[in-house]
Image (cartoon, rainbow, N blue to C red):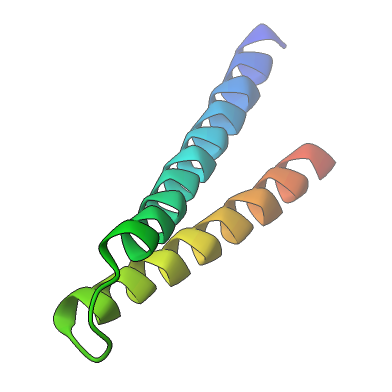
Length: 72
């Protein structure tokens, strides 16, 4: 019982850590876009939007994983 609870808690903590990393990536790219204003169609511009998309998708995936984890 205790081992199972500890394993579930560790998994939930790992999923939350992934969600926090995704938030940091997303917000970092938004702040970079706002303050640096990269020139459109450059490597920095594409990189910023790529990081923004990856952060948003990573957060959504983490939250779906957490819902599925809690249903078990």
